[in-house]
Length: 85
Image (cartoon, rainbow, N blue to C red; front, side, top):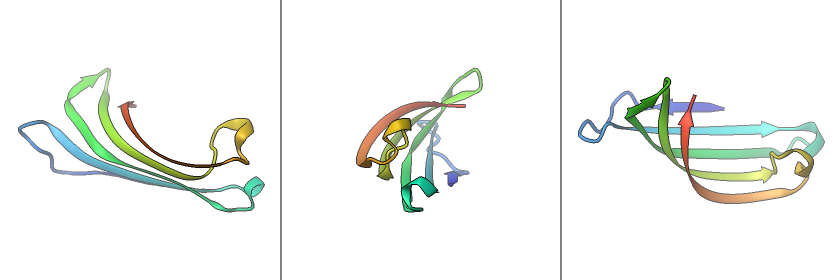
């Protein structure tokens, strides 16, 4: 995968654009591609114990990343609020 954190930000709101993509291939799923995309904003003035707050739109397509359901196909779009490590 790859992640992008913009070197510039919206100064009046302390918001920084961020984006990421993760592509996985697993043998147990016939080497098919599982894709996860995220893009949104990081709030730079809310830092707790070195963690930053992010608001992201998310999209995933492929096999489920959750344990015993790895052979189940998933397709979803969502919104999340995350504390990044």
